[in-house]
Image 1: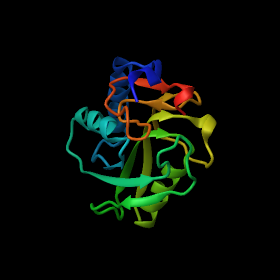
Image 2: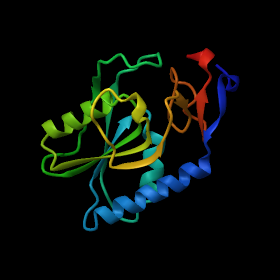
Image 3: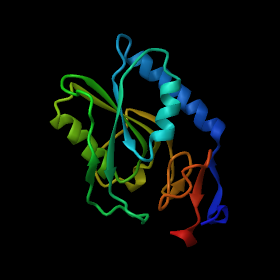
Image 4: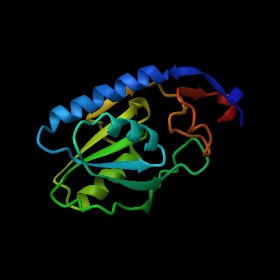
Length: 178
């Protein structure tokens, strides 16, 4: 796969940076005493979460979940699998789930349920990208960087078959690659 497989930029790195700053500021305002435990969903959220936490002005804890539902395709299999659970205590804590994109909502819904079964005090969702037109389950982010059209996007941590995560901007994958 080459850069010829991607189309024009959907979101430039400067736009992404401003959205990340905005969301970090809002999260800190919403949690004035103590920031919640931040739980990133791997692998896609790692760049977004790194940039988000660098904008935080107070200490916090973080952890990760690793879930899968896509495999090597562009359509969700509909079956979410837990590959790695959290290691930090969750019970009675406020948790901020950090997602790269809320698409079908299946992975996000699974993650919220997982944290609720661990008896989190509260669970809020922070997503860089929201694609509500593709939703298959009721899930709504509390913090959203951008609402995007029903396109398959790559870059800034988002991938297609483990490719393109390194791109600093977010691009649409050309239809011929899907």
